[in-house]
Amino acid sequence: MCNKFNEFALFVTTQNPDIVCVTETWLHTDISDSLVCPKEYCVTRCNRNGGGGSIAILVLNSVKFSVVDIPSEFSALEMICIDEQYGAQTCRIIGYSRSPGCSAQDIDYMLLSVRCLQKLCSSDKVTVIMGDFNLPHIDWSYYHATDNIIYNSFLKFVNSYGLIQFVDKPTRENNILDLVLTTSDMSISDVDVFPPISNSDYNVVMFNTNFVNSLNNHCTSTPTLFNWSKANYAMISEDLCSFDWNHVFQHCFHVEDCWSMFIETLTRSVNEHVPVVHTSTKRNKYPTCHYARYIRKLINDKGMAWKRWKFSKLECDKLAYKAAAAQCFSAIKRYHAAKELELIRKNNLGSFYNYVNKKLNSRSDIPDICDKDGNLCADNSAKCTVFNNFFARVFTNDDSTTPTLSPRVNTAQVYLGLVYIHSCSGLYYSQKAKTHHFPWSR
Image (cartoon, rainbow, N blue to C red; front, side, top):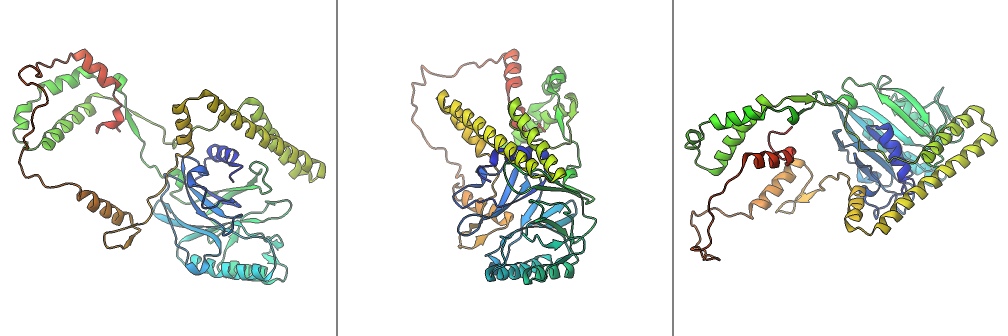
């Protein structure tokens, strides 16, 4: 995943999925999440002990989800479990990866996997299991396989829990290794197989969910923004000038009360005299990398070569696809290397930090923290309480005593006189201000 991140990020930002399950990531603890996770996603990882393999699930930042703890007895498995919120319904997503083989160690791994999957599937939630199972000898038309303890134990679990497998096209060579299983036959549709990312051997499997409140429609209200270019500033000024501030402020005994009253009055005037515009309900996407025309042509040629090979099954077409994938991978790698070399030659510290910050711009949840008694807090409300109690100790109660400070200047000669602000200057600087910092911005 590390050496294919540019093409992976291009695929994710182009297809814009809500959930992405990646197997064979080859990630380890020395690689931070922000280096392998696109900007609009949050990643949950399970790194294989000793390097290699590994699995990760990427979830869109606007999607509500929680990570399900897998018991420690199954820590040797490459498995991730999360609960996604589909409106009022919760769906359990399980990502799984298994290395190929039929040794005694592989048998123990499969038996352990089945026991773990049984625990995770024993709930009232609709469950979707996806990943690389490396079981090529299963005939999914009849849910039948060769007489083997690995295949028999897995198929017994599938049939016992009424799981339905949706992938019906090869995902690597002529074998169906990547599976999508679910406990509800109406929850998944439009399953299709797409060309591999970069020069990978595994194809991409994509599908849609059929829940009533799907993730794509989680935004029920249409967001609005103030159209300041058509605002009636004269009426706003008239409202503020005609308001009896002295009468209102005489009932305010603290500065915060005066400020709240001022903001409330200003917000009411802005809502009355500034029109709003409705924005698109489509979620905002970070811009994709705009490659040169020759690279876009190589990407299209790679896709056409893959389709030609899948249709003809000829060895010559397979070799042509491999050559196109290698050429595309090399061109994208050289493109980004040239961009980074240009950044180095520019010798601009600001541009360098801007480039690094864009690479590291990824949301990360606050890890579990300890309270003053040493207890570990995982709940968000408990974390807020711990932070609130900690920062509250920084402040002290006001004793209403004003400290005496010696003046640093000669007050007889240096003083602040009349301050005059012209209306044009005030309007100029108010228009240049960032409106999203004010409480009336939306």
